[in-house]
Length: 194
Image 1 (cartoon, rainbow, N blue to C red):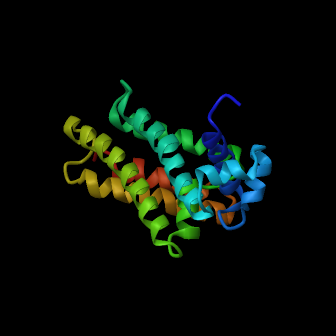
Image 2 (image 1 turned 90 degrees about the vertical axis):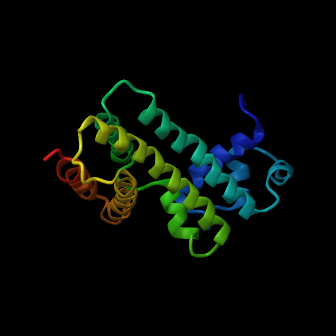
């Protein structure tokens, strides 16, 4: 298999949940797709809720850490890093036909109101996204790349919130137009230097 069983189950489960939603994905389907026995699942996850919470952590590790690397470990100017990160996400959304959205955003919409443990775990992921964006915006402000009135923390929160909203509208319309609006307003209006 190449990776440990728990990681394999999470990877398969993450893909299924991203396509179908958490409540529409059964444990038996995850087990069948992962080709592991039921006992293996329950060895790592005492319940479906525990599995779901591990999925949130799986996405934090894989997606948010990739975001951190892209935003922090590059020689490009800060705003180019931020724009490049969103362009990379946009390419993946284009390839999926504007259907899947963000796995964390999807879980938030589906489970955030129903389960306080999910809400708390998801909020931590969104906070991490915002903090990495804040770091880049702080660097851009220090360089004079964005207007001095921009508050990096508030703006980072706004950008993450706007991106998630654009993804919701994108999924509903199966259109890139909300993503185009996001890019225009964030990079050509809000962050534009005068």
